[in-house]
Length: 530
Image (cartoon, rainbow, N blue to C red; front, side, top):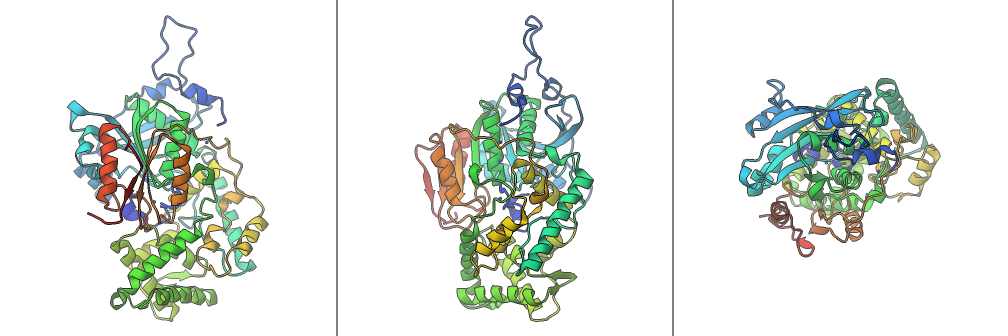
């Protein structure tokens, strides 16, 4: 969800990408029926058969080329080293007017090497919403091990994301997410901030934002499928990508082979306020990180016990409430500190924990009045939150969320939620219950999709996932009797396959991708890594 709400999850922990996925995925428009027509053109002998309104998109010629955009393009270098090529697929901006304005969707592809046993194309989405996926085929192909050679592994930057046609509102931040502050005056400033973000999107991208929905992204996916020459595609979606998979398989039944949803979003909880209800999971993840950090007090000096480390975090927030902290060239106030803490908790591994601990150490030194040059992780997060460096990301993420569902429009409703929240929770509830730009957005063009209940999908979720809650995965699984659920126990991990390092999870997913047969029963995997 963010990643985040979860970019590659090796980087997601540095931003709010996996969290709004949120993570990661919906029935109006009579056009939906038209989009399920065969991709083949109507036979000349049967003039009564309606022509495919998307024929020119379904049968477009794709020109594959190097993914490298220049000497500083690290993603392009990784793709080139993995043997990937890239192309752009043309899609309609507005599917109700397919002969009108067009945009492009960027793809990368690593071709199958085992052509004799080729299964087909595996299309990826790494979450967000708004996360780039074009750079993901190399590490996903590696995670797939031997079965990877039997697939064309395809990364797709959704519309308005990454290398696809851009949507940029000219924001001074990379995220609409903030804490609410400590009083009504700060909440009112947050309300003004959110209204300004929405105004900027109307001004700078008003021609695009109505068409940023997950339903339109699913329609793009089906154009991609047809343009690749595939009758069906397999799909791997993380976080928000799980919701996109739910929507696609509902809108285009019969167009998928093998479907893996990792970090599962309950569609009933998806929308502009999807972070609500994650507070307990966030506290649990923070406590587990505090245990890890306390055991390494010699390295980080944040406290020798869990309670001491948590007290350090609370002291940082108290200091920020008194006056903004100076961290390098940034001023970090009590609305930003909770967002940094929230952002540091999605990946359960020593590298992510260590990066977060270094960032908290920097914040503590700033709270004590010391000059601070932020660590790389903290510098990256503050640049993301406090400058326009990632305006495109935040603009696209917000446009998707606001196009997918309505948010309450009265600021007083958010204020009431904040007042009802746990008064002892100064870190998570002020973020998850806060107002955001969707309160000032135009209503969605379509109603949310009613997700089908007969999808034979393989789901993956960690019990302590602080973004896409395990309870949500259980709910979706119960509603889909034909699905199976792989549970990673005792890990506060958002997105698992190929990322966390669980042989139990990875082997089960790869077995399904190889055979197309779901496990006979749900699978429980211990936390232990290989």
